[in-house]
Image (cartoon, rainbow, N blue to C red; front, side, top):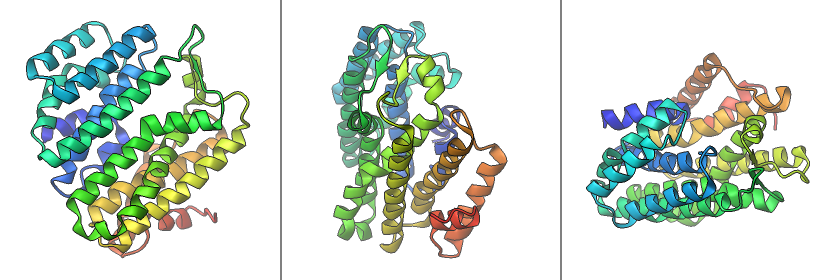
Length: 308
């Protein structure tokens, strides 16, 4: 687990904070799931590769998830590393460690392995469809519905996967399975929309125009706020039906951080970020709220002066 967490810390600041409090075996399952999604994201983001190469890598990745062997994982991992899949040091290390991640994936309990396989493959296939739309200018999304479809492929499916893992382990949540499943897509979409708004200038410079040209930016901000409200309802449903504190921190902390990031981008424009001191303050606020039995996300927003 230490090696998996080392890869996690090198590839995601937010999830490196929020995953460790999860109870086992969910913690290990979510860690492996994140790393698998990150491998797929790395191929999708490899805009210095021709689209055909990115689609092929996503297809090979899906093959490994379905029925690949350790030897095949080693072969693909070495080939992707030699081809220079990413300029990000942490992502390069993750790709090089593909055999290790797949070994950890195969060692999970069978029910969890089946959940991860089904959802990660669907996400990789969705990414490949969008990569297939890339032209000489890159990828441009056409409408708000197109943006939502993209967010579902890369993040909404993540929300659905997490929900199934929670339901697998926490018997008390099964009575509200329908409510959780109905909100899972918006939970993932909310976090992705905030990232898209924050990184829009950088993405556009690399040929990824996720914000549709014909859609006013306030419409996207409004959708992000709506989805974050649904994400809060998701966390509150977990809390009301006996989810452990670690699971509430895992789901509540990214939502609280997303609210803060959205406010920063609204105030200062694309590229605005919340600094590490503010991140640590939000982490402490969420943990204090949970220790007091209060609503983690709403508590954080109240302290920050947000009256929405």
